[in-house]
Image 1 (cartoon, rainbow, N blue to C red):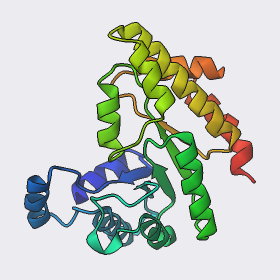
Image 2: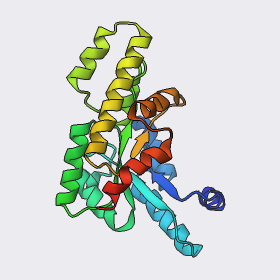
Image 3: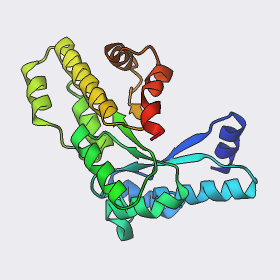
Length: 222
């Protein structure tokens, strides 16, 4: 891990998203015996120690955020908001993984109420095939999908082009709502297929990530 951080620093990488180990329970037991990085806190502490030992400014560090506690969280930190509050003093941003708009806004409100004012980035993964829902649920640790989205996909039947159109339209409208509600950042899960993200950019009237970032700058300065 130290060699990886050395390589990242030399390459000019500035931000790291620190994630714990998310594997089936038997595998997690084996990993827990072999690494201090089963939970994100262990990885964050190691990155901080690396920065101090190398007398470097360090990386911007992000952690995953969920509206309720993850079952993979450290047992003593089951309360999702408590995890966030504990991390605020040493991390720069919170990555809200694959939350639909209403849940994202509730998470942000709860953080603000608790005095947590670090940037919160929303995760977006367009549904471009019927198997995407299963993958999304895995990444978001059991995300609940809006009934309207599920009904629209069900009406598509086995037509992949129709599913693709529905998924991109839904993700575009989700991005519009988040931008209107002053989201601090959007992270697109491409799963090695960037075409959907490019089409969402087109629907939003932007050409690239920098143009999308410019839309969020006024909100970030308030």
